[in-house]
Amino acid sequence: MPTPIKMPALSPTMEEGTLARWLVKEGDTVSSGDIMAEIETDKATMEFEAVDEGVIAKIEVPEGTENVKVGTVIAILAEEGEDVGDAAAAEVDGGSSKPVRAEPVEAPSSTPDATPQEKNSPSTSSGRTDEGSAPKAEGDRIIASPLAKRIAEQKGIDLSGVTGSGPNGRIVKADVEGAKPGAAPSMAASAAPTPSAPQPVAQLGGDLDAPYEAQKLNNVRKVIARRLTEAKQTIPHIYLTVDVRLDALLKLRGELNKSLEADGVKLSVNDLLIKALARALQRVPKCNVSFQGDELFQYAREDVSVAVAAPSGLITPIIRDAGRKGLAQISSEMKELAGKARDGKLQPHEFQGGTASLSNLGMFGTKQFDAVINPPQAMILAVGAGEQRPHVVDGALQVATVMSATGSFDHRAIDGADGAQLMQAFQQLVENPMGLVV
Figure 1 (spheres, rainbow, N blue to C red):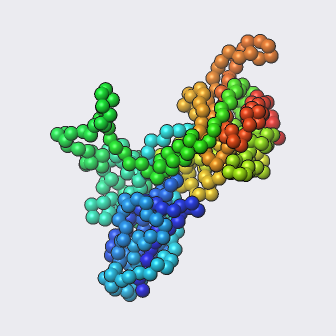
Figure 2 (figure 1 turned 120 degrees about the horizontal axis):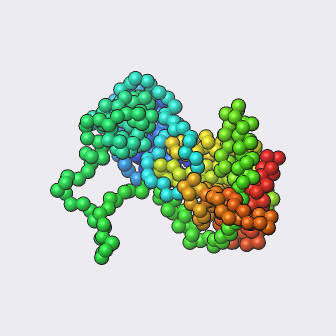
Figure 3 (figure 1 turned 45 degrees about the horizontal axis):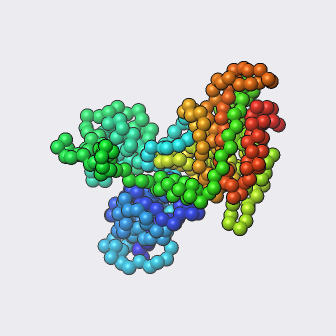
């Protein structure tokens, strides 16, 4: 009996997705563990695997189709010994499809417009490798991950000459990073209009006319646009800024890193700021809340969402129970989560939730900024660069390393005085950082 394969729900909140790419075609035989397609959700591009053996009798939804509802039949699988033609023509019922296993893969690249994180986490390719296998092609199409294709476009690499190390010879990021530009035209060049073709021009009128290229929004960017528009339209933001001396914190960080060097741990300033925000929320629990209509949720744990700029857009992995974790554990978890975020490998439980957020643009030299609250949270802390400034210390003018930090608060849930107490607690913890190690 033919088996319908349906659009799976790859996260608890997923209602629809984009069928980004088929990795099989009609007539292909699949076995348990074979990757069949890539599906773009609102947070990552996921690939799913076949569980049972069979033949792809019919593909119902072509690749590139957007807004495919969960439960929609996307393909028909003919079981062993079943006539493929009969299976393709058969009416399938609306029952459950065969289960699939979903794994995140490298997300399609786009230009991130925000945030944070040290860029020293190693990128990872697909967990399964088949060294030395040739890239799997279907017709004229080379099987490669979206990120690998983008890197190839940017470097002018001809993927037909690249050996894939992923499943079934699939080309992944690691395969193209060390490859040299080939003689064949790159994907970008082959897709570009001929010199005689007119370039599209934005019809803005007057001096604003300029050549442009229309880029389709991926699902991550759509979600960012929707949620942040909602935040600015529905949340009454109040902004509170403090200047914080970093000298004591930087000194403590240096001492801690010396003692942790043998363990392979290297704390970043951001790791200490995550801990400082969590401890400040412990001291001022009125700010560890969220507005829920007729109710106010008071959280008993400090789950800090940390903004990370991933290729597909901004995402906020979570350090859960950060107030009770040691600095070394926070550092280790943050490096792992940031690496997963940039490779599009975060699991839903690693980025969904959080009781407050931290956004750090200091590594880009930004002095001060106001961040947009990530609903349903009620606050986000934006920190800028530490810089040498004239500063009054103990009644005397001195030069100190100073950082500006701005808290954005949902005024429906947090009063100005409570927000000010949180900023004061954060300032005190950073300037007297021994409170972060006890």
